[in-house]
Image (tube, rainbow, N blue to C red; front, side, top):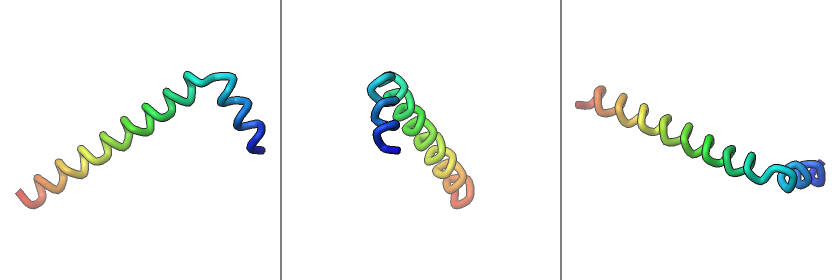
Length: 43
């Protein structure tokens, strides 16, 4: 199972980088929305 994962990572390192960028972008957007909601709620 892990060897298959390692093979796919070696085959396409660009995909791994894009996956990390996507995770970071989604996380940033999520916290931005949470901050805006909190600001509206308490502001």
